[in-house]
Figure 1 (cartoon, rainbow, N blue to C red):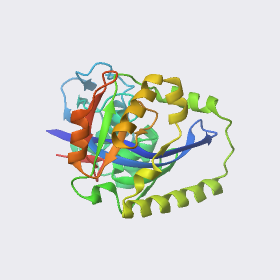
Figure 2: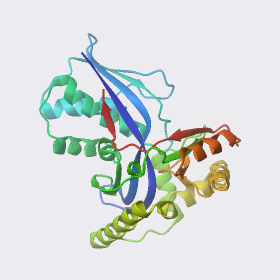
Figure 3: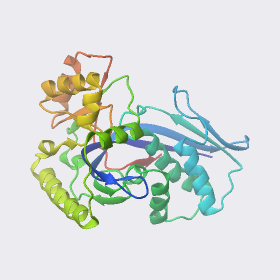
Figure 4: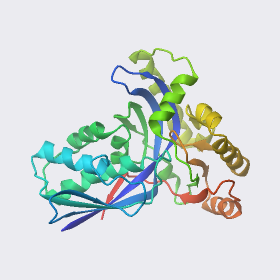
Length: 304
């Protein structure tokens, strides 16, 4: 038996980063959106003892540092199901270190896929708790759609109206450059670039409420691109002029541009796919970046 899982990438439409917490993570408030750019995982029992990761994409870890591997170990520990032999084949389409949560999506997909492959009884709430233990973006990758995400990423508040509800023509133009930005280094750069303000939980809760109301109203009236924001842009684009040039170039083409997560992917939103396709067709790369059209997804994980 084999289980096939599609694991969707995410975009940060809004990302505000607060101070570092005692556990070493940062508090965030973000609007995250699933897109149909996805990795595919095939999970199957294997005669090879232990866990085996198979992927032909260079740079993808094939050992215990891979979040799909970690997910298998965690699922085994939580359910008592032994890992007698497990092969996880990753068909990698989400760029690495692009701010699109490809590794986190694979971790979320492995949790869902293993629940089916092993036939273990585990409720969604327990699955989300396991996802939070794997990484900050994994819970959202498990949920998908359009959601307000806060804490270190483990607190999810889905919006009742999302971009996928705007119809089949709504889409994003992504520019994916051949450069990578390591997340920890991006947080370190952000911390060094500004004096941090200590935030109390009450102020974060008020911020969350304000942002949620603002974005839900913007989703209804279609004006949400004016609220695109990312705290990482100032320090990353200052430190990486090639990404700054890319960002400026897309802004000139589309009228706006935003970096996802800590980069390096930059994107713009279009109400009509024909306009996005026209922009992608006419786009002249600056540094080998690849334009990709991606449509919003209402889920984070699809089981075949």
